[in-house]
Length: 444
Image (cartoon, rainbow, N blue to C red):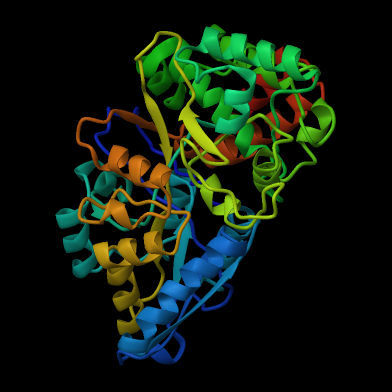
């Protein structure tokens, strides 16, 4: 899905760089895994994850190209309900050889089954050499390193049409108040909704809404409160989180402001999160809030002129980071996925080593629609000016970020009650009840 999910068991420290990404999924294997790959460098390795469509195709191509030299066949298939299915598969003896895990909470749960193998030395060496130390911590539990990062995305971009902004005589906002003023101006100039949004994502429906709330917690209350929220020291029912929901509601619950190109407020829940790309590209949706990985969706749509949209400051679409309450106060939320092995086979270990290398990062980034926080990967291989800049931002040691909060929360909340609560909230359930319902996920 590209939405990168991960949970952490303690408040986050400020991170220097960030990143992770997207992958497809495949069934089968068993906890010993490897099929006919055991004992030799060839064979077949099965990978499970949560990415489908063009992103899965791009990842499979990287493995196919690598397999020509390695002699290893990688079977990769997407499952939109990966988060809901993977623990059952593992505990039922049907683990894949490798899983690309989109949430730290889920990763911790999988490690707790006893079926995830400690990372091979080659993987650990790659991570030590090529990644920020923070990333190794995220794949480590009880002092054992299990899981390497893969690719990356930056949350909290606002995608828009530069040509439309020029036509309307408006500029990219520098503060939250300017964003609200821009929203009102576009609505008045066009007579229609300035925003579109989609929360539908199969078994993961609701997650795009959590990104909105997380961005607002950061911007309104700051990183310290954000960390306390992740640690459950600040509750969903506390005022800072209620304030963030209210701020998001000023846009997403306003029938004059959404849902451009799709319908009314409730159509947010029936609109697939990736479908917003086509509406931004053809000009029917002035703005949408989504991560850097939306560039992959633009590769599969057409503009009103029937062409693939150009992602550039003077192109068909571009993006700016959701502004803070004060100009220049930029704290960036990121997401990512981690690669966990369930097999000791030689072939599986070789695939794991490849996936933690700058060569893998360069190959996948070159296929388009993805970026990496691997410090030795080449950002100039990214498929657009936007992604080049985003990747440089991730690799910059001066960049301060916070990891996706819902990914850091226990799975019963982060990918459970929080996701469901966002759907209920859009459907009209009163906010106080929604916040209480989400908080109750800690008791499950």
